[in-house]
Image (tube, rainbow, N blue to C red; front, side, top):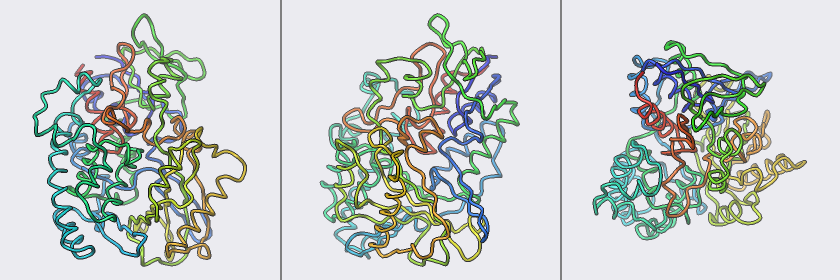
Length: 486
């Protein structure tokens, strides 16, 4: 039996801790925040009308079989998770006034035909056949296996069909332009690059696997909010004997010789262990916890961040689905602003609104809105400058009004979260949601789960295989399998 220290009680850290404890290891988790969950955050606002509750991280639960396997492997099902299937998955509102509701399976192409015509639907079906091959290839070679670098990825037994599917050197934007004639479908496809914090003009074509996972297999909301996943993982860890210390920051990884030998807490306390698992942004690990300048330098190109409004809204807004995205007239201008030099918030951004139908999230007669706009990370742009956050909040609400959803006279309150706030809350450099941006030929390659020294492992959305709840849980499985049973 090995002793294992886990840095961070995000989904990746808790999932790894549960797997390792189930395998017979003695596991201790240290989390600097007062609550578990990491980027799977929650925010509560008490008003005279009642209590509003928000998920401040992911809002869509996909590939539930990954979570089911995790809980089954660590002791049984998780009755705490109450899945509610979503249809539409997302309501897409385009600048020409048209609307398209996405759904899982073949029915989506039928909706495209009804909204945009049979030619657009046939284009989508052709792309979708390609997407299926990309998904199968990615699942087999990348998402479920350890990949420690480009040489290992290149050395895999790729079939010619696999290589043709992932189209090395081609971008997601290029793939959309090749297969989709309707500019609205191209815009819809481009948005999935932002699921990895990337610019679709520079993101690899293999990211086509992301919309496939959502639109082929479906998406769910968790009654009570997606934060209930963190609760379920924390309960499973407790049942397995994992010790979790909240409000306890780690200052550094303890290195003796050429191996990780534990951690040093922020207060100077030394905690020794046989193994260390860091559920932290890889740049934070290699810049702050275990300085490794070469590795840190390779991680400095940050993914995009998120500017968030949490709104208490009086009355009902029939136009909204659970998830609604309002596209801008010029989508490229958004990416030019975020990834340009100097970076700046987009003037006319895509606006993503989650309005949960769960009665536990808001008082009767009200709506709880989570409003997300892609934004440059802290550092590329100074979100802490006086007046910047509130001024941009005004701008986002004006953009929504311009797109036909003006709630400014119905607001009970608005709370603002910037990339600087995420940086503070989760110690993710710049508040970049996905760590490094998935750009270029190496866009599929995330920092490896094996650390820079022996007996150190990394887990979570900033490392292999990537961001998003199912991939983070797959990352935990990869790490736990590498460590093995006690």
